[in-house]
Length: 296
Image (cartoon, rainbow, N blue to C red; front, top):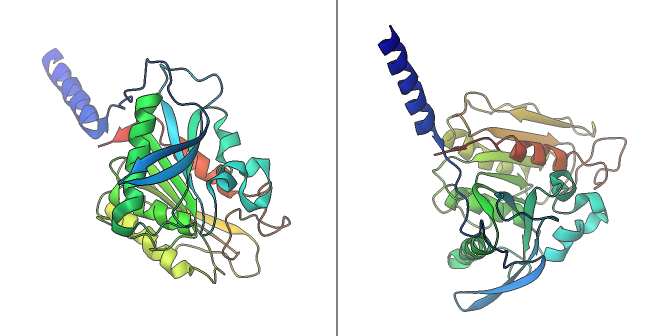
């Protein structure tokens, strides 16, 4: 009986280790940091690219930090993401997540070429790769805790990251995005949170549903077709979690009664309001729920 019990215990341990990949710390861990907060410039395929980075206060070089990218909208700027966007709210910095992270994450806001994310020839994906390498070598990053969030064109680029870099990122949150930056690959699972307005007249919610459904399929979830969405005029939002997904690969979908906006808020607050928005708290909670383990 003891032998059987021991074998069963070993089998359980083996299955556990098979299902869960141990988080890898970047090469910058255990070393004096070579990166400080501020605007950085790197060269990618002969083109100078810029991003702004925020290193946590009281940074510790032996602690693996989350790395969260916030991607701007068309015509937007990296400093707008870092400073609270067009909402003018200090609570909306990095789509509302900086304040919620409470110094537990490194935040990065890259600058798109010509105010956008065309990703021609994969140029913006190469930029993402270059930033990952640069930050990994200069700071202590938990490589199983990379995330991206973006609105509109930034949501589209975040979707492109989900499609092409699912093995390098733990999860994404796409706010009112479209397939504007491409979808190279698009067959690997990644934790996915889509957010869209039912009255979006710029990038229709039907496109958002289709993007969501790609990862519903990739993640082995039950269909989300027919997921509840708020009625026009209700000024509310409904968040649905997919069922049956592979362990570690959840899919969430939040539809709100609003237009093409980033900081959606329920009534009685204004339709877009960085102080009252539920988007940041729900996106942060989604990312933070994936902290324990990183699936293979």
